[in-house]
Image (cartoon, rainbow, N blue to C red; front, top):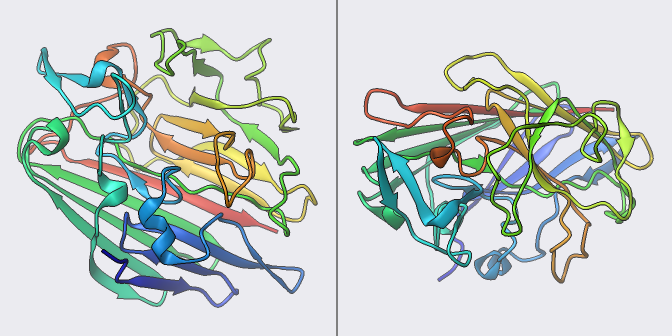
Length: 317
């Protein structure tokens, strides 16, 4: 098995983004900072290395991103079993899910790419045949818009997202970025990474990034931050989720989305050829285990209510 296709989209300001059909992955984003090229996404040297990737380097993940407790989700008041791939839980849609599928190119232009995949009814336990379409569009203002549409033949659980590891430093060093998260609440976790069901204020906790600050060297994140207590995916309104800044303060990445929450992962489990904490993931999404937590902002996807999520990453120099 080999990766057959990779694609480029670009703008006239010098941004060049590479995407592969395997997992619809972002594999690089090169921009220009003070007349010098700077790649802000971690990736492997060879496309073939992605076939053995276990760190989710840049793909679309799902059908449901993040964790679902006990690998089962509530659908119409019935517990629907799903594929378990992280002990007894499900992570990022189960085994060989969206990150490991060869997607089909539907349309390509200089600054836009659309990829699509189809999942059979019952794929990894998910009810309903699903068509998932992702559209990457690069603006002249160095903004990458990722639009993900999910259509299902039956009521099902859906909530995919993108999973690039960002490093805005020129040399991709582990020097800590400055981070601002515009969330007043987060979801505390149990010792298996599953939310307890509580929604807690970040005030007077280590999770308060409402004011920009450097991520401490000793502090690791793999946590979900709530931007809204309501399901916002039915709206075109973009919520401001985060801003991350390079160590040299020459580059900022702004993260907006219509998803109500965002997972922040500081890459502490990265393995060779990368270093622990070398990249940071900023993943707009529903909260982990939302299908089993009635107080989390979420809705089921159905034939009559498709899911449209929009994620925007914008650079400022």
